[in-house]
Structure formats: C-alpha cells, structure tokens
Image 1: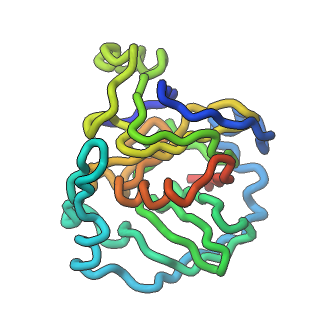
Image 2 (image 1 turned 90 degrees about the horizontal axis):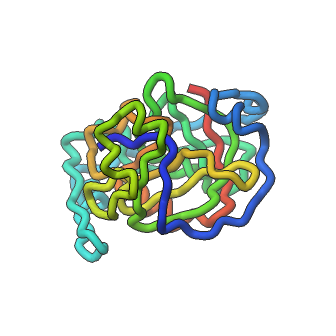
Length: 232
C-alpha cells in the first residue's frame, strides 16, 4: 500500500515544540531557500555489501510485535543497500539528510562520513524540500488517511477511523514524524517491507526505508533531530 500525505497516528508520542526554519507553505511546495549554503559532497563509498552480508543485515526480525520477514535482496539494486560513505557537510552529527533526487537518506556521523540508506520518495507532484525536525516517533503506529487523501482515493475511506498496526499498515514498524514550528507537517520517514519500491517515487511526499534500515535509523534518532530535505 502506498503512503498518503497527512498521516495521523493515534499512538503518537508527545513532541516538544521547536522553532522551524521557514514557513509551512514553503516546506510543502518545495522551497529550497537557504540550502545553497550546505557543503554537500557525498559520496565515495566504503565498499558494497556482499550477498552474505546483505542477507544477514536484511534478515528476518522474528521478535518484533509483528514478525518482519527477510528482505528479498534480489529485488533491490545493490547501490541502495545500507553502507557507510564519505560525506562532507556542515551539519552536525545525527542530522538526517534526505536526497530525493538520488533516492537516499543519510545520517551524518560527524567524522566526514554518513550512514546511507536507500529510499523511496514522493512521486511527481508531491516532492518538497527544506528543513524540519523529528517531532515524535512511533513503533507500529496506527495509520489514518487525511480527508484530502480520501477525496483523491475513496478506497481508503474505510480507514478513516484508523488502520490497526501490522505488516499491512503503510507506516510499517517504525515512523519518524517531521515537524516545523511545533506543527506536524503531514510528512514522515516510515518503514516498508517492499524492496521493489526502493529507488522509486511512489508516495505522497513521505520517505520510506526498508524496515531493517528504518529500525537502525530510528534507534539512533531522538526527538528534535534536524532533518534536511534537499531539492529534487
């Protein structure tokens, strides 16, 4: 199932407000103001995973609330598998940088490197860019489509009261919610068990990582972490 915009979570965690960097409208329409100052030069890799390594990293997660199956790594381009890369940036360690043009999400490690994850991103018409921060986090969240999405896709109206957590829930096992000025932007970083979506534009602005990658990023990302979404 494809994520829509305006995802709501009935099991949300409290989020402290923090001043944002620019207007909500600018965030939604994809303003790139202020991003030109970023010194980004990412990205010679430190070496790709072997098949054996990938099968271990992306293996099953039987102890989760809803057991997560292993990723069929044959369905994903190897360049989108998790790896450490050289990444020059002025952003501090822990910052998340989304590169929708190349279908990557980076976590800055602070030593001239970053952890790079393959991602799916917003399809045409739903691309955006700018600065935000993680306002809240959730494990196995409930998904509620917004009114705007129900109008576009009437078939999701049956979930207007919320879709229960589980492998069929579009948000998956872990979700990071993007905020500005104390307000939820309607965009998320979420987890998916569908490797065939990585490296594609499929969602209504949200960004998906393989569940095993999202769990790795989620565990290292506290509330208030800065997120930079580069222009597509």
